[in-house]
Length: 327
Image (cartoon, rainbow, N blue to C red; front, side, top):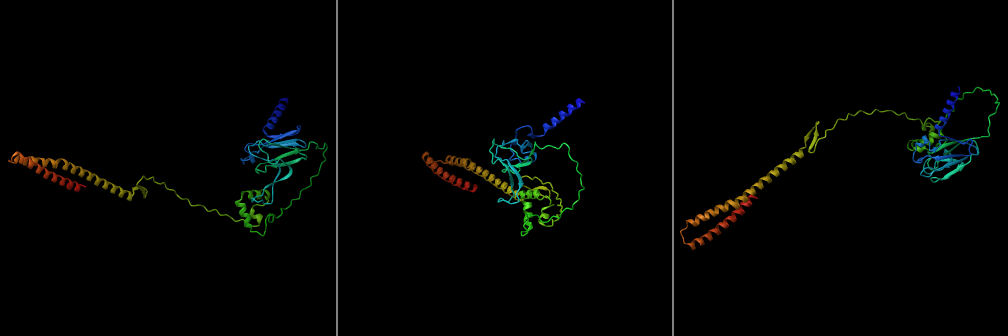
């Protein structure tokens, strides 16, 4: 039996250490700190923007609130949405005047001593998603030793009242104005859902009948695989074929290259003909004519000079004529 009692005590202690709760009973000071990156991490609204996440203190305890984040914060009591729209087009949270630290720089703190028991919500005026609750107990309140028995009277079931148009609606305006704001402004939608949850929808709140949306099934479009045709080819009837313009360009290019190559070969042939073959023939004829002459030495020299001049002129004329025809 004693062994079971010890196990129960250990289990209670372990469960207590797993829950992030700060209890201020039997102590004079309670510390609350902001979580790192709480100002930019909107998920802390669910996971906890402050540590400890739940704070239980007593009347008269000193609550020290410290900004441990890298940006500015405030510890402001209250947090209900205002019913008056501000200049930026949304409904801000407002304080209840119990305490307000003002804007706290990183590593700065603020102290508050609770005077009344109850639940005290607070929030950050800079980052409205940071909200939390402090539970304040009254240590002087005792439970009576002999509680009196009370008779439970049967409750009468009341029929729910018929909801009319919501109080924030200006009936001189077009109700569609409120519906458009609800659908297009997330802050306005959050304010309405939080403060007018008794209405099924924004349509009911402004006195309009909610339209019935019909679901239109989109037709299924079969996407066929596309061919990855190479350069100079196009897809036609599911196969890659050569593009007509590209083929014509290639044919013209091949024909031009062939003509240029033929012309280069012809120029080479004409050059060899004029430089080697024609001069060789002329030299042979020159030698034969001089050999057949029966004149003296001076007559042969004079004849040789004349023949050389004639052959040279003929050779120059042939060179220009043949090369110009080859070009």
